[in-house]
Length: 349
Image (cartoon, rainbow, N blue to C red; front, top):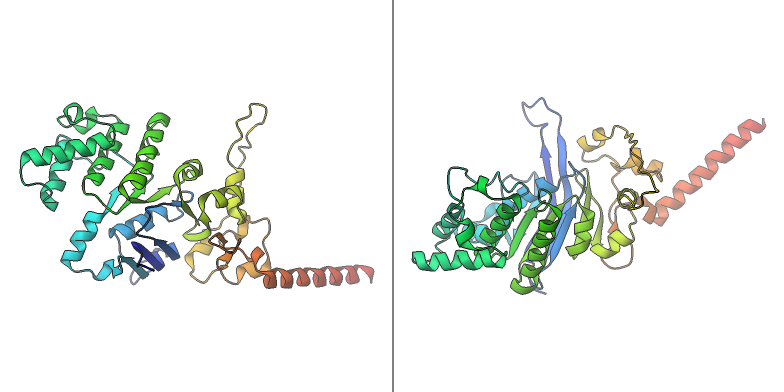
């Protein structure tokens, strides 16, 4: 078995709570594991609500912030201990597409500047003609033409054009992996479909893998091969995307799927939301299940320790819930029966 393209081992990131820091600690990501194979290229989705740790995970992979514990390996090399040559290769082969397609542009330069910088830094072309051909090819892949956009300033392009140009810039480097952080959340529906289609084509035709970070389960279902669903920095359920979304097992994921509105004018949406305070469970690594305050199936055992991932189908579908630990469920059920018998006995006397 060949070494993976990217391997994330038991990764944890904690903000705050350090020496001389008055702010309480927040566990952004805890004990996260992920493996992306070299072949074939895949689209792996990291899904979850705002604040679940998705963007923190992307920043860790891209090297923008450092780990609290754990490892991130690229082709078997720890990214934290890479030498300059390895870092240069990593930065070329692992590219990013961010959520806001405007924030990444310098408004004082024409948009061709983002391509010129990449070509110069990575020495992709020996002359202007070769550089222009590289840029044109990259733009053609995303359905654009250089003569229409390269001499414009960022504010003269639509959000969809700016985002497609960022995909083209990443593609020009011929990366092995693109970390796409909410790449379609700020574009309209038609361009969303176009960008998702570009991702699929790059996977199938160019052997480029994607780490697709999103809160949108519908787009995850459309293009994702594998999915990891986060809740407050921990994986609740993971596996084949279609299996997880069509047959969710974790109570949080079940509620997430059930909350998707039904396109029926006769069925009113329930807009009343009442959520218990639960952030205190996120401040401690050894706390119990963070979904406990909202879980309809909560048990006393859930507060002892966060549940590990239990296999659902014997393959890669896993859920972090004690409902799938027969020993724990049996023990809690027995305690329930004992408690009920005790109450009944007291009432009888």
